[in-house]
Structures are given as C-alpha cells and as structure tokens.
Image 1: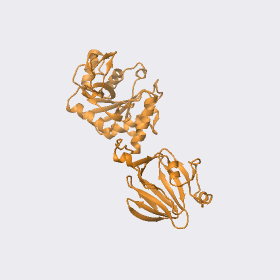
Image 2: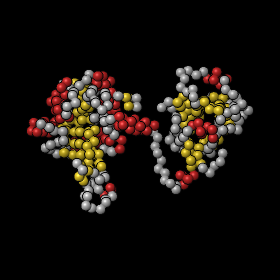
Image 3: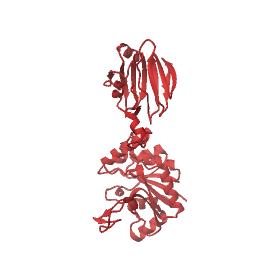
Image 4: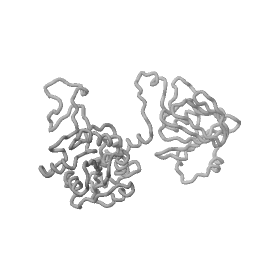
Length: 381
C-alpha cells in the first residue's frame, strides 16, 4: 500500500501574511510539519503541495518531493476538495494523508497513530478532531444539553467533536468516487468514516497573530524542558519552600550589593581587563550574556560570603571558577574547588557555595533568566 503525505502550503494568506514562511521559535512554520512527517516513518512519499516554487527549496532541503499545483488552485477561493483532487489525479498512491503546516506541534507519534488507525480499521476517510466536553451551541441552539433541564457537570456530558483539521486521510478510491458522484469528498461523503482525537499542544492551530504567540510560548516551554510541579495550597512543600526567580534580587539577598546588568551581550569582552576594573574590596556581579537560550554572570564574593542553600527543580547548573577558592556543598557533601575548576550540579540537588581563603573568589555562573531557585522557608541565612 502506497501511503502519501501531502503538506499543502499556499503562499498567500490574508490574516497572517506568508504564515508558512514565518519564523516560529527560529524556524519557518512549515519546517515543523515536515520534520514530524519524516520522523513518523509511515509514509511512502512526502510532498509539499504549493502554488509557489519557494517551497521547492524546503523539499530539496529535507529530501522530500514538491508538487507545483496549477496557478488557479492557489487563490483564496480554492477549496480543499479541488487541490486534493488535483493532487490525487497527478500523484500515484493508495492513501492520501493531508498534514496542515498550521499545526506545528503535532507529534510524529500522533501522525503514526493516525495512519495506523486508518489502515487497521479500513476507513475510507479519517478526520482529526478535538473533543469539547462542555456545553456547546450551534446557531444559538444547544447541541449536547437541553435548556429545560438542570445543570450537568461537564464530565458527564457527551463530548462534541470539533474538526482539528491538522490531519485528514482519504483512500484514493473513495475520494475519486465521491468527487465524481457529488463534486466534493472532504468530509468523507459515502464510505466508512472515522474520527481521530488529538489533544494538548497538537490542537494549537495558527489562523491569526494570537495563535502565533500561543505557539511560540508553547514551543519555548517544550524546548526548555521545564516542567511544572503539582503543588497545592496547604501542602508541606508549599508552606516550607519558597521560590525566587529574579536574579538581581537573589544576588542582593545573597549579599552581593553591586550588580551590573546594564551592559550585557557585548560583542567581545576581555576578561582580564574586566577583572582589573572591579573593586576587590566588595562583592559584585556583572552579567555578560543574557539571551533566550542562556545567560552568563560573573560573581565575586569576599571570604565568608556565598549563596543560600537552594535547588533548581528544572535546571542543570554549571559554574567555571575564575579565581580564588570556594567551599561547595552538594546534597550534604562538601568540596573545595579552586581557580580553573568546572562544577556541575544536577537539578533537584540542594547546594550552596561559600568563598574561602584570603582573597575574593570569582565564579562564572551559566544559567538562564527566570530559572526557579527553591529555598527553605525556615532557614534564615
């Protein structure tokens, strides 16, 4: 059986101009669907179907195929039936799976499961949907509840299935027959039709600017590997631990009073000259790098000074010791570290550092803006 993946990508778009080419978290929007299709490893061939040759560059880059649809099928008035039918009549196959690039967070596993469900159940058409398990209306009339009844908990309601559209599947044979008989085939018409539920991030569909912002935030969250812990008011962890995230406030509480966060991201910084320019009689910090990916901050403290006992729930931390000596405590174990050492601390490990010796100790802290620092409420340091 020849299973074809078709990624439609029109160059024109009214609500979000050229949205398939717009960068999302640093990559063109269409790249995400291409990569997911390739990683799913279920397709005989993968095509980009477009009215513009610029998308042939993506096909070449990813070693997939490009189908240039006729110009008259690239207008706003062209519907899905028309360009899908044109594709089926010109590209040989048995099953066509349409993957929309406007849902960039669809996973390879979901694509694979979609195809397997269609084949195993011998569907003529398979539609991706999102379950809405809450009271729904159509044309101001109830769909899954009655006006003349008492309130129902949403968890007892029959879900209304809304088209997700990210994935649509048709057999070539059924699509051709429905087009010949009715002039349309998108919803399945005659034949065995199935519905495949997608959830979570996969339901983000980009139609307007706000959708782009939502997808951007979701991708940054996914790529950061940050995961939120489940905590409830009244829990022991909620009452005995405190979260701090603002770096300059953290440094102030650690006794570092002179902090320069105003001259970061310079093209070149000469470290020896920078160190010579600092006051060695007081503690200080200077942030060198602060980007969406990471940050790097020089921190100098006098003997006896350091930071408070804490841990990071979602961040593996590392430090480069620029000068001096430090006593490091990691999960109750003590280490003496000196100039030239690199220290790595895994997330969730309690740790603190204290400057020792007879001169200031300086470390380069490599981290990221907003990393949670968890402190014990009952520890006064």
